[in-house]
Image (tube, rainbow, N blue to C red):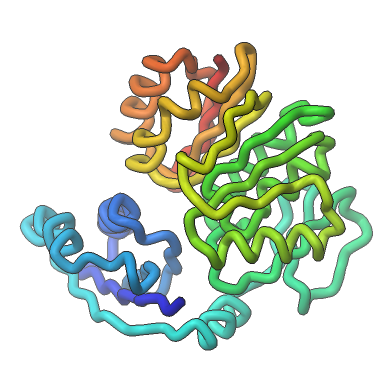
Length: 278
C-alpha cells in the first residue's frame, strides 16, 4: 500500500495554524504528521485520499491565514526509509524505553519495547501515543482484559501486556497495522495479544476491563456506543487523538450518553489524552 505525503507550508509559520490544519486533516483520515521547517508533512493511505473532502475541510482556513501544500506519492518500499531516518529512541519517564530494531538496548529501563516502524502509526513519538503510555503507567493492568482500538504498531497493546494484562485484543482497519502488531508482538516476545484487522464491527462480543482508543475525534464519536457496550461496569477507557478545544467537551458529552464519565486528562501542545470510567 502506497501513501500520499502532503507538504504544508504556512506563512507566517505559527504553531496554532499548523494545529488547526492537522486537526482538519486528522478528521478525514490523515494518520501521521511530521514537523518540518516552516510547516509539516501529513500522510494518508493512497486509497483514503479524498481531494474533494480535503479542499472542503481546508477552505475555511484560507480566509484566516496563508498556507500552501504540495502532494507527493510515497511508495511502500520507501516508507520504511522515511520512518527509519526520523526514528529516534524515546523514553516514558524512567520506566519505558522504546527503540527500533536498529538501536541498542538500555538495560537500566525496567521495560523496553522494540518497534519495527514500517508504515504503521504509533511509535511513541507523537504526543498522543506518549501521553497514553504515561497514563497507562499509573493504571493497574494486572490480570485485566484489554481492548486496543486503532492499535497501529501495537505499542499500547505491548505495553499493556508488559504491565500485566491477561488478554489483549488489538484492532486496526489498516492491514499494514494489523501485520505490524503481529510482528512487533513477536519482537517483544508477547503471546497474549490477538490482532484483528477491522473496525468497530470487529470488536468481539466480550467485556473488557480497560479500553485504549488512540484514533481521532470523529472515529471515536462513531465508535463510542460500541465502547459503552463492551466496557465492564467499573472499567476504564482511555481516549486520545484529538485536541482539548473543542474536542474534549464533545468527547465528554458523547461518552456520557453511554455511561462513561470523565475523570482526568493530560495535555501536550493542545493534544490531550483522557481517562473515563464506566
